[in-house]
Image (tube, rainbow, N blue to C red; front, side, top):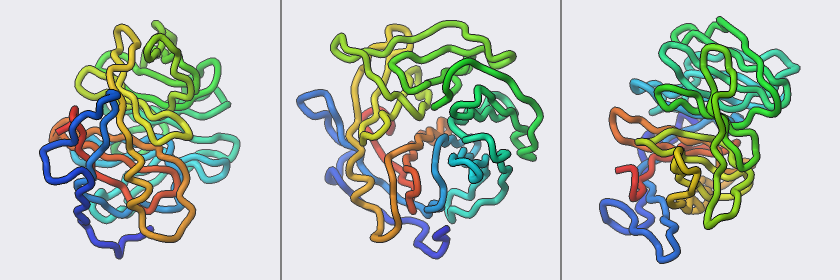
Length: 256
């Protein structure tokens, strides 16, 4: 961890405006408002913030965990490790329960939000990538262009959302976040986040987050962008990546 780094570093990428303006092709660039320490050893898979508490799911066999993190310092306040056979993936909060996917095992672990004790286990078919909650259903990605609506009680599939942009399917949908009636998804191995209409599956707009990796301090071995956390109470949006030493608060034309 890099808890010795400054708590707040203001980096204005798009100029001093309330939000970055949309580009002619419909893409918008994120504006970095602040950055915070983040554990550079964390292979970030899922990220969420609720009531000021930051939760993270990390991956890799033998290193996977679910964590509660202090936002300002990046310190891991509490952590529960997954058994070695499991590779942690997406994370979502439903009431007082955290749901954590696993990659190829077809198992979702359920945790008590306060203690991070495992209190349940459910199963699903196929791979698990990203996970979010829209207030009624869980929404899950598996790396394809199809998102699944999931019943939180038994993890049964309630329906599907086929994601397209200009009529073409968008593959490699990964980490998910539900923001003001939209599904936001990062595309694996890219620096792009798409905003999806959950009813039609159409991509409404996309965000260029390439400024984030360039803003990381020298050193380390940062991997791809992965990790979207929306604080609905404060209207703040946070992004990070696998093995990144910083977590960024950003502004976009949609999240101000």
